[in-house]
Image 1 (spheres, rainbow, N blue to C red):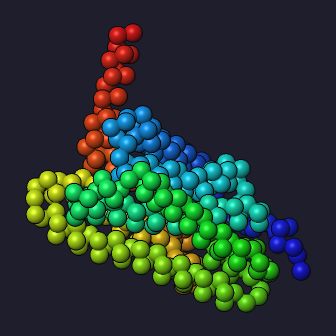
Image 2 (image 1 turned 180 degrees about the vertical axis):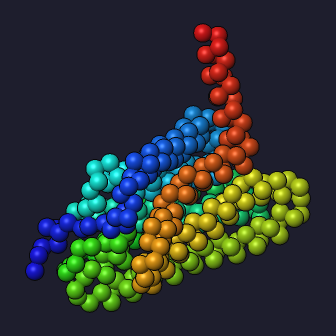
Image 3 (image 1 turned 30 degrees about the horizontal axis):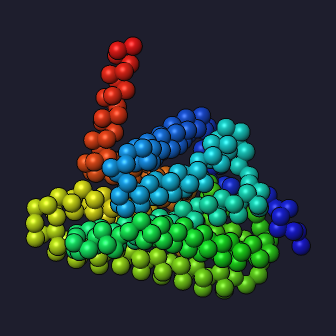
Length: 311
């Protein structure tokens, strides 16, 4: 039996798109650069402005950094494949790509849960907000978000790495845990049980967020200030959660239960949207809806424009 670390996987998701790979490369490169730029802009804006050093904005910085990690787990390999016309990946690189992408997924869910908790306290218990959301509490929540997510991913990666593999063709444009597990020639019951535990855990997080939003809506109805706070901070958070959960569930269902080869290009594009669209759209949604961030960004832009005009 071949040692797993000697295996080179063949990614079959792009095999039908060879004629247009230059167009795809240009589009993917622009998308990646724009994604990194908008997330970095939000992080830098919040970091440099002390008035934005509030829990919600700190959590938003963490979310933006996570978006960069998620995009970076997908785009560099895709760009390399499109540029070199080579659709292979080593076993070690595949595990690495899975580790980063799944850390991104779990951090996204946990981060959105933490942000929902912050908004719940801010709107439903405004008088206790400063007492409950201290700097120490914020640091603990950030540590929980990242450490718990990395731990979940590490366990899943170890469970997958122990499996002996008999095949090496992956019908996607990037590595996913289930696609690698399906290549195994031994029993993968433990992997299935752990995967369903993770699905249940993070769907429970999404449900918890939705329940908290019922209370947030009830509280927001009471006053115009609460309604404005809800529209500016909670609505983009809700849109982010719904889109991310929907796109991720599509990828999960497609990987596990899709048996046909019809419309493979479309299926692969839709399956990758949780790595493409949320990292691109989320900072734009938050930047447009959070008035303090929007005003600070406009101030910096107009200030720089004025300097260039003087020169």
